[in-house]
Amino acid sequence: MLTIKNIDKAIGMMCYGRDIYHIRTTTNTIGEQAYVFEFDAIQDGQVPMGYNKPTEVHLIRHADKDGRYKVFVMGLAATTEANVTNDSIINKHGLWVVVSYCLERAKQFWDNKTN
Picture 1 (cartoon, rainbow, N blue to C red):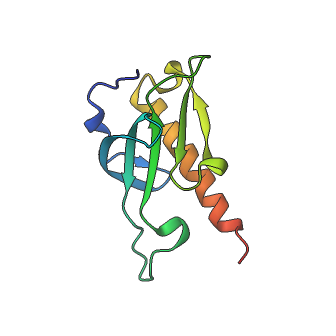
Picture 2 (tube, one colour):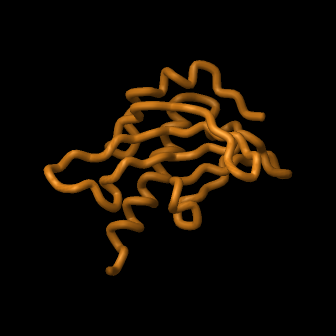
């Protein structure tokens, strides 16, 4: 199981223009444990919708058979999911890149969504 020492030091880190305001661990309904990076709503004077609403990026802590971990934006897993290795998240910069990638994919989804 993936353990990131001093994970709380990522609080306040900016990923794709948004600050991480909270990090927690959770276990989903199928028993997977995850780190959850929480981003508050973007306050732009309007009701937060789409990309502007509060967002969670989940990093599954158990590797698959190839040693990779899933990371995705909750609610948009099919669009934002990526597989990462220990090497890509071994330091704060790597973690920032991975989380930012998921947020970027979420923004692209919301920007291109047709009503």
